[in-house]
Length: 351
Image 1 (tube, rainbow, N blue to C red):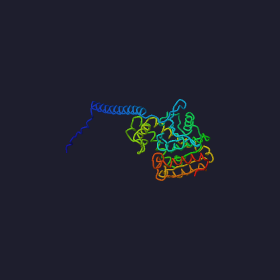
Image 2 (image 1 turned 90 degrees about the vertical axis):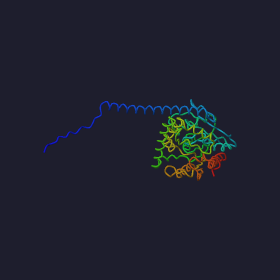
Image 3 (image 1 turned 60 degrees about the vertical axis):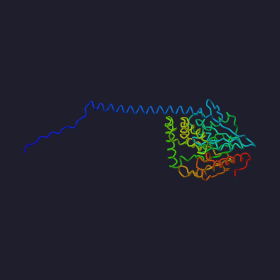
Image 4 (image 1 turned 120 degrees about the horizontal axis):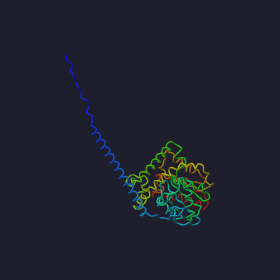
């Protein structure tokens, strides 16, 4: 048998020129994509900057801006003190501003002077020094009220994180606080007591950090913004004004800073002395709110126990924001504030 020699051809290799051309084409595509992304980012940045300037021009502060030492804070006061009734100070929750008291403030103003304000960096107030914890926020408010000539003692009403901040004020300036109203208020342990609470805080922190990045390129003006949903039954121009205030870089920077400092704020409160004995304290709880771990009513009951002179009302059917945003449930908020006002005026215990 004769052997047959079979030659197997080697696979064809791309020539050096073809390889060079393929690499060059890939680089051109990559460079084109980078240029396109950079152009989109630049356009988004310009859009955000121009829209912010236009919003500031179109929506002016309803109250006065007060110098608090080289920066200005916004204070909006209505009504007048009558029959010895104290001034009420309204403190919005995280990401809030004076517009949030649109339904509450006029009703309270029927019986006494009431002032809403924007924390540093929120609404129409300039940013303030870091950290944005309860101690700094309370100091800001104290300076603002003194500079504006609004004397105490005060009844302070705070919603959500605002409840934490008014408690910070009460711990630092107890002689200037006549009563407190906690409206579905945050609790010093809600982010630390349970795994679910800790997980919710971590998730919120990621949300705020992401928002700070996205807002700079105008993406939160055209995409989902969790703070932009103004109550549907508010006037259209009022809703537009609300959206303008929560679509700025300053808003997201401040909201993230307040959230980042909230654990320190809560630790400050845990270490604070008790409230003055017999201080009138109203706690209003949203019935639909369960919190991150299902313990919301337990937390609210603990808040009501901070004073021997307290009243605790659960508003069934109300969610967290409804106590200031929904006309069906705002009356419960107003009534609680009125009750504390009258307890202060008359010296009688809360009913």
